[in-house]
Image 1 (cartoon, rainbow, N blue to C red):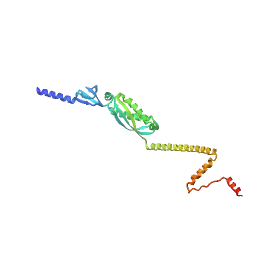
Image 2: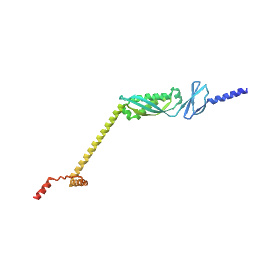
Image 3: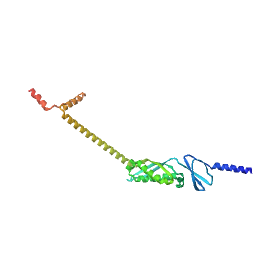
Image 4: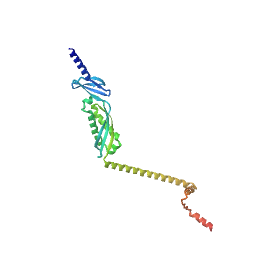
Length: 248
């Protein structure tokens, strides 16, 4: 009799020990009893009776999932390879287990198809210039679709947009042409400003008596600083004739 009681006590202690489950602070447990959903299990030590009960742990921390490169065609029929990172977390552990078979895989697949659809609605220039807008649109669509699964999408970031080699060359030529156009515009504006300044200077010199002679002397002074310069000074014909009359 004593041996039987000892066996029962040992068996009971063993069952209790193997029934203990630990749920960490960043986790929630989804408890089932006889195959039916029973309740949500909070962090701590919990007893799960073998055979009759089971529990699935769900991590509630934010997860970063790398969406692999996807072949997409933009609205203007340009092929591009795009990948992204999606940040999401489980907001309802029970729904994440009961409503979808594998929420990790489901979110990744949904993000891939949504990314291709969103890119297909945008032209290439719009996609390259407004990547944040495309990422925001992907986030909204994925968040709405995963809400019944108990998933909350925090952010979506487009990492790379890779174009075919021929399209990259076309874009490079376009950028070079744009730079040349800006250079021509800047140069022409500079010439216009220089012409306007010269016009104002000429007007000022013509209005002031002796200003032109002072400017001429100043120019001669600048030229005389370099001995290698040869200066040819043009004199008015009237002055030469005056000298000729004085010699007679």
